[in-house]
Image (cartoon, rainbow, N blue to C red; front, side, top):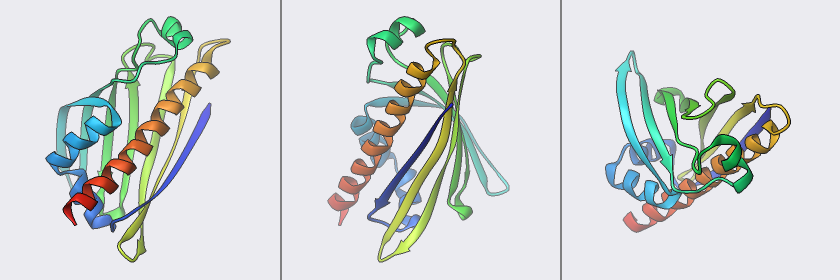
Length: 165
């Protein structure tokens, strides 16, 4: 099991973060910056909780050894999300297109207002790959993809907000 923890201080309050999160122009920029495409499969809100699933296709290729192990050059997956915006909390669970019975990847995105028009985004999660001898290599590749993606989204948000200031 490989834990992940990512922190970003963002140049907006939580209300602006969520407004940006749902903005279609920002989403297009985000997909371009983080180098992936996303197709929403379903989206429903019940009792103030918004749940949706999306198929995500990263442009980044996996390291050669991981490609050989998985039989694919990209880690295509379906991400299930459960957002409690009032609590500034998003729970996510990822099911990869390959080896879904051997890979578990889930976590939480939590926002916290810092004042002065800033908030902290913390992502915590874990990745477990149950493949004897190589699970750690695959976990590392997935973790690197997740960290790179969240770093890119932080930069994209900062640029998008600056362009609108």
